[in-house]
Image (cartoon, rainbow, N blue to C red; front, side, top):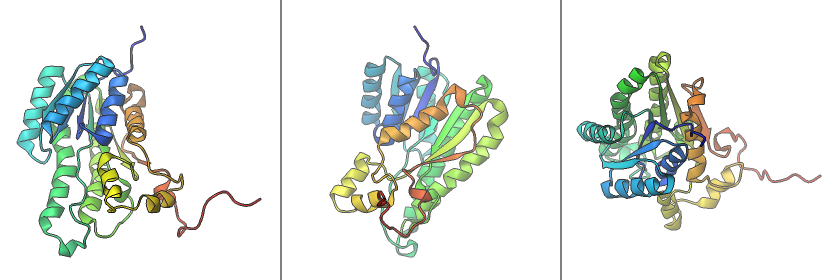
Length: 268
């Protein structure tokens, strides 16, 4: 029987109960990794882990934690590492969407601070917890979730934009610190992805699907599994010469420079 590339590795995915996080956990399990899921919804983390174990035949476990809470992160990490073994792959996916779409000065500062605490703080907490074992093993893969809004500017979402931009700095700093220890650190910057959360916003009229689909050169939103596929590639043992890179996976959204003309097939 052929050994899968991540057999014997343990992958921890934050915010892994649904959406991109769940798709990523499933992709890593398909590559043979045992799966640790951390989510603020502990029951969903456990049920997702059980479903992945049943479908892929790997070991899997879930734990509840608010990634902005350092003590909760430490408790969850200790429990999962104790049950499954040292974490060799870390996907810092946990995050929240903007609480309000308003100018920065019209929102409470708590909105801004919460964005940084969850996105950047959560990634920093779990990286701090997992890197020592990765260094000891001489192998590690860390993938952080940034966003196209960490590359472009968008009004009325300052906290989210700053947090996702900060993920790039976290990625590059950790990449340089750990490259000589067999640890790579990269980031993925998704475009507009049709997760349950964003689908709900589309259905409630909070987001215009067709507007953003037209702005995207491929003409549609992405799917969670398309982001997961890139994360799984970066987690592969053969991807050890790729580090400190931010990968836009956005259907061309961030490269488009025209003001919105029709870019369909040209007349002959």
